[in-house]
Image (cartoon, rainbow, N blue to C red; front, top):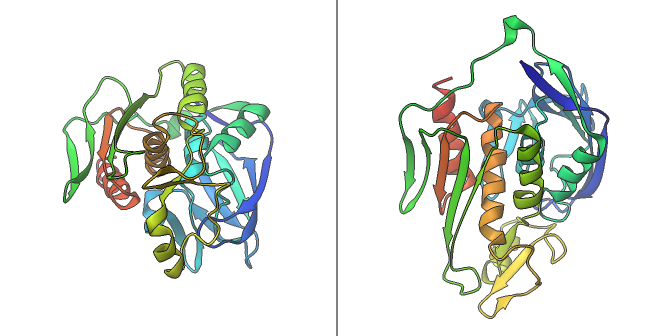
Length: 284
């Protein structure tokens, strides 16, 4: 059984979506079996925050992890890139409390990973685990929104969204994790990673007054109004729903690996994603 880590370190610097503060991130190779984890290099004793479901402590408009007094926010895009590109073990050093948004997608992360490449790691027999196959459907509901894990022959992510704004409307998209690892990495980098975060013009003022999206701009987020997109062009006709798949991939990566299942979501949120991950974790 093989795991993979980065063949070399990658570094990115940028503004956090909610904090508006610039941070520097270094993603480094890590030992086999260590998983993906953050290190707050700006704090005394360099606290480690594991990228695990149990570490989630906040899910409002992003996913936040914490351990003790240390926390790290908006982890989903970077974690989605690592998981989608096949990086099982990574040490993520950051000098602040929020992962930079970069261009609003995971494309820069995915490209950086592809540029340095991966190193295979042999897993000791004593540490090998049998991948979980979902045997019975798991459903999490909130009003008309839901997220589910359904028994399936392959691991697949499908998402639906529905907005009153005509430029978005009702959208669906599906992406599967191919059994061919290289094909899966390529499809993630081409079909999911480039999809940017998006916001609704009429909500921006309220969110800013609530202390959120301080670092949001037309350079790192798509904005939609009643007359259409404020900052076109889109990278895909259905870029918003593809971005929701990106978020779901990032949130479910906190399980450590993707169980074999069809993950299906509609009008869901980080909170619902994490509730599903918690239910699945109870089965592992």
